[in-house]
Every structure is written in structure tokens, then in C-alpha cells.
Length: 478
Image (cartoon, rainbow, N blue to C red; front, side, top):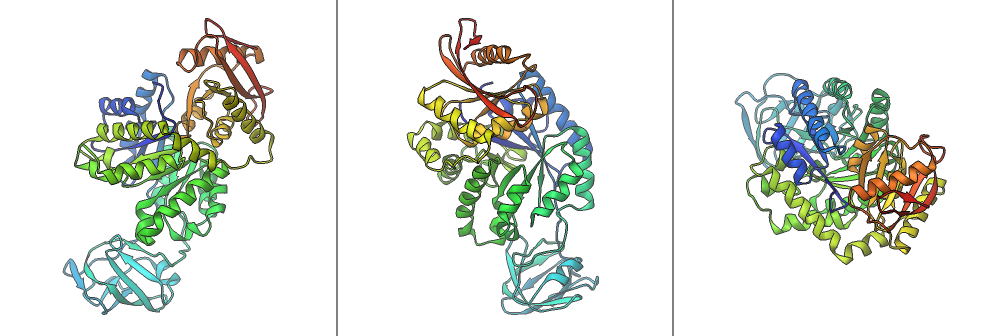
């Protein structure tokens, strides 16, 4: 199951894609990582999906990543006496702590933390931004607002606060229960919603204790101002364009997507571009031309992965959506402009031995036009460092650690193989050639470059580069 593209594909599972046959088809079509959205998935169903994915993984012998996406805090209005009201532009509307059902002049806001943090001039966006209010008078018991953009408002609609820094954790009691259940099940990535600051990520990491990697979802304006700190605290980043586009002007989202992609690459952290990438394919077997261009833009920018949400979870054409993403990725990566964009955006290596080795290996591989760059990696860090360089040859990562292999499923350009650790350097070189030969990356007589850490099996010690020739049986020698 060698992919013919470097960018990875995440597919969300749901009602349209929960059984073994469909998950198998999605993997064959190009899905590298499967996302389980805990907003809609009870624990029993989550465990069932994980078991099914592991079944598919074992039948293909290739690591598959599983990402569990935590719901995060859901801020909502209370109820209205008549179920709904019509808010008019310019009218006054009050949000308060009174639990009495609301009317056209007021409604309960069952979140004292919002009332405590709101200040005059702050915006409130209701129902995904369809209705917009501006706070004019605020206390800990109520907020008097002016309706700037009116519309129909009904029970329990969501509230977004683009200007307000809320003193709340990114994890609710539900998220903590979901997180523990996911960790016990053995998932690989945790996507953290409602991230406002680096401390939110660090709080989650204290609970996780290394049992999974943390992907920070950037969907709040407050996170944009602290992006560098959040990236440093996280293992990966998700550009959650849907919620980001509710709380920020839509025209800002494309430039923020580019900024986040480049910042994550400079930091050597995987970055996923998500939300509404092929939205029309929920109902249609083919995407719009604009959607194809949107997906292609993320590929050109060098993102590690692109994600399908409702398209694969609840749409009518989940396999076609994955296949479409797969074809777009392959086509963009054949374009000579793609390579020139990646090269122009290549960051300078960090002043560490590992990054210097990764940069040198990339230069050697491209200068000698080698067919593969092979990494022996225990923790996965060597392969991540090499992927940061976006080398021209494919990256083959060999690891004895199945958990590392599954986490690498989201990383750009990495074809991961789980194998017994090398006995010594000669065995490492020989089996590197055999594995690359077996998986179709090299032919007999070609040379490969091998990057590893010595002593073998110690994480984070990338310090060796070897060039080896592949023999007639695939074994490599110096």
C-alpha cells in the first residue's frame, strides 16, 4: 500500500463510514489517519471503531493513525418561552443569569464565566455567526447588548466570543472522560478543541502522560495571538477553518492558513488543514472547481495533511471524497512548481545535531538523485526531522515501535514500516535496503541514504548518515 503522494489524508468516521468494509475501502482509496469525533461518538462506539481500524491495519501490515477529537466547551444560550424569537437590527437584547425562559428582550446565558469576562465593545456571535451582538453594559449578572445583525434565534444556539479571553479550561468533564477512554483504547493522536493558550495544551499533556500525541486545533482568535507558544507546547497543529471563520472575518482565514502552515513547518511540527475542503461532496459525487483549488492550495503550501469531516463521516460519497483528495495530491505533487514552492519555503535547520544531519541527508539525497531516504527511528523524531526538510526522494521510516509508526501516519512524505530493531549497524544498513526494495522504492544496483541514531534504540540521537548500494536481493552494503 505505497502511496504515490507525500501529503497525508485524514478521514472522519461516522454513520456513513463505520463498518469494516467501508473503513477498508477508505484506506485503500487513500486515508492514512482516521478521525473519531467525540462530539458524536459514545465510548462503546469509539472502542468499536478503534478495533475495526486495527483489524484493517493488521490485514495490510501498514501503520494506520487514529485521531480522537475532543468536543471542548460548548457555549450555548438558554431556552425561549416560545422556542424562538426574531431579533431586529438596533434593538437592545439582554443576556443574564436568570434561568427563566427568554423572550424578545432577554435570555438566560448559563455561563457565568462569560458574563464575568465580557466587556463593553466585545462582540457575541450567535448560531455560527448568523446573529451578531455588541456588548454595551456588562456586570457579573447580565450583559446588555445591541443587535448589529439580527435574525431568528431559538433554544440552545451556540455562542462565540471573538474578543473575549475566557478563563475556562479547554477540557470539560466530558472531555476528560472521553480522553481517558481513548487513551485506554490506545489511540495515537488527541485533537484538543477550544485552545486559547499554551497552558491548555500543557494541561492535556499532564493527563495524557505520553500515551498519545497532542494536536492543538486553532479555532479561536485568542490562539492566533499566542500561536508560537501553542506550537511549541503541541506535537502538531490543526487549522480548524470552520470555527476560525465564524469568529474572524472570512477573508482573514486563507492568510492565517498559510501563516500557520509555515510556522508549524519551521517548528518541525505536523500541520493539518481541515474543514469544508470538499463540502459539496456530502451530496455530490464530484467536487466544485473551487474546492479542488482549495485542496490543491493546501498541498502546494506543504501542509502535512488534509482532512475530510462530514464528507467521509456522513456524506453520500465517502470513498469518492477520499479518492478525489488522493488524486488532487498526486497531481499537484507532479507539478514542477510544487517542488519550487517547497524549496523556497524551506526553513534553516535548527542548531542541533539531529536537524543538521537531516538537512545534510536531504542535500546528499538530492545531489546524488537517490531514490529513497531511509530513517531508522525509535521514537519517530528522526523521520519528523527529515520530513521538515521536504526532501525530493520518498522518506522510508523503519521503526520497532508500532506506536511511533502510527503517529508518523500524519507526517508529510513518510512511508512507515514496523520491523524488528537492527542488531548492529551492518544489519541496519542491510535491512534498510531490503525493506526499501520490497516496498518498491529502489531497484537492485541503486544507492540509498540511511539516517539513524547511534547507539541504536535510543530516542532522539539522530547522528549518522550512510550511503549504501542495494544488492540483487535487496540487501544494502556500504
